[in-house]
Image (cartoon, rainbow over all chains, first blue to last red; front, top):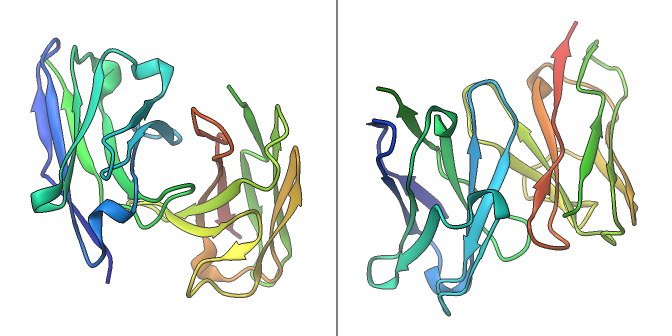
Length: 116
Length: 107
């Protein structure tokens, strides 16, 4: 079955960068886009962007433009989300989700904590 | 950007009740809407896409309807396992946007 395996929790200092991975299995990786969504503690869902692994084309939410970079390594069926210039407001669970339009399933999430 | 306004933000209902959650889009999104359920401490799971197409394994008590700017998620007979938060997502145009969420509690 389709599985998305995300990397483990991270603790970062303000100003640092974080790179979260999402390893895919159970389907043809280049057949589906990968979306990234984050959820701050006790808050709702926020779409960050998506990448098409076949073409490398990305779409980003303006909120994150310039700070987020989505990439993939097709050889190992893995997607990455890198976020730079971290602040405490970036403390959240980051999810990957497979899909060309709406998306599902999702990974289990990666908690990123930004703290001095 | 398309703004999604979801209501109510929370609701409490009894087992067996009919529950309705609505999402309104600031622009016409045709039927490009999905609904997600998030149980406490878990990742969201998609319930349906294209407004009303249920994902595999989703019970038939969940029903979606609407088009354009007004959409509804209905649970026909609430079950204890339906507790959690529900979100709508528009994927008609970038950036994709979620509703603010509805927290559903069981009385």
